[in-house]
Length: 158
Image 1 (tube, helix red, strand yellow):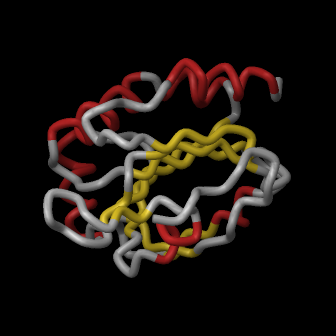
Image 2 (cartoon, helix red, strand yellow):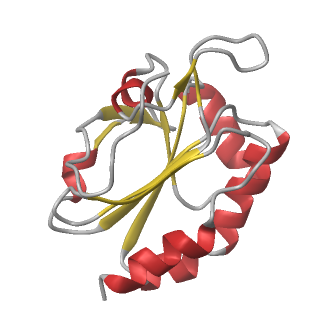
Image 3 (cartoon, helix red, strand yellow):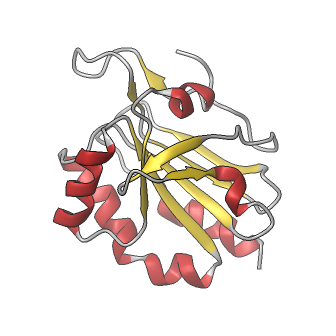
């Protein structure tokens, strides 16, 4: 498995499909918003659902910190659309079906319960200039990201 990107480095550009099949690029937020990228293994799995519902329940805080939250998994955008609807998620989900973003960010897991090419649970905060200001890559997919650390990094931008 490759190492993921270090803090202080430029975040790799990506263009992925959202739950409506529309293309969304990281560069669209440059100069506009800080971006929280949440890579997660699979929609509808227990810890992933808990992670994204926790994020959903804290969206007022992320909005107040001028942050765009984006969840990314290798699921198809059709699956993510159903997941978003089922869990009433109020932020963007992107399909990394071709595994390009997961690979670029160094979070592609070679063995996830026997499945090859699933994203590790990982979080990145990318500032308005496109620089990674926080990264956390979890070896245990049953663990949740450190949401407080993410929020503390965002508070520094105010």
